[in-house]
Length: 498
Image (tube, helix red, strand yellow):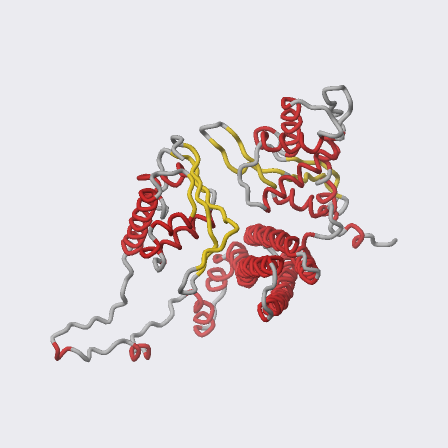
């Protein structure tokens, strides 16, 4: 009879991938109607909602709840359905509860595993809780790992090759001059790298928990080796892509900029280069983690074998019984008991002593210690306190110059006190950090005393709830050749004193 073992290999993984689509069909079966009693395409609404959550993740928007999803659904269905705000909110709630059932219960399916010859359960989550606003009592959501897999499955390629495909698409878009599309592709690449990192963390836990015999060890070893090989290949492709971007950028720099379009192209390719550099750095760290994962698998296997041997070893039977059951020559008895005796110990001079510092300065009356210098824990606290005081003074000075305005630009601040601020590096660091982290929740930062802005925000911004810094179009240039892109600082909340 023909052996169908190979045919059934990986049956559980196949069922898990197919089951990811089940929530979409659950939405389709709900038969929701609009305010004119016409049916709504809930299957399409479910897919659009996934795309919306993915877009919000790309834009790093952390506050995505029922209200935000309802606004999106209303805008998508305005031409095909008649819906009030209340109806749109009800549909959004239905979608979220389908993808993430109330009380955080995971989605699942019971099926018969023909490979293992037993019933099994596959569980997954499309959405997961992201953060909770206790004041407004609003729950925000984001895509879970399986939600990303479901979305990637609609693109006709496997998520394992997402980074390589994104690299290829980025290069093609740069060749065609589609810099905005290339930047978006780099953002998708960053999410794929984060997804790989989560998977490796999951594999590490499984390796430490499940390796108990040689067959399991070989299976995980092949999986880890495949991940490592793919990461090395992607790492080389990053270098090639970075080289192409540098060549393309240098080509724009070598010729004079004739119009605003070419200036924009140069700015965009620099931005793509910077964002790709960040993704490359994150990806490089995965290579180190994959090597460490290999080590973890070997250690887990060795420990499993070691403890299995200890548990199965019977001292009474293997040692005591043989020594007392029948007379043994003294030499044989000594050999049998040797593993259970202490090893010989002795003191000697270590060769490493030559690397210790010599006390050459005793004649000057100085006591030289050979001990290692220990870093005090208060060193970090003092540096943080100094930085907090510096940013407190900078923010207070800016507010004084701007007469407490809730909205002002970097140019306005520099125009008020350019001589003092032009060469003040901490002043620009302050603006750059605000811009990178924008928008910032002021109340959250005030509550965390270890945050670098905690002191400044507590003293000057306690009446506001959010601060945002965004780029403006004009570029600030000065006589010494220094230049920076203008930015605008906006405060939300507080009294209306603009």
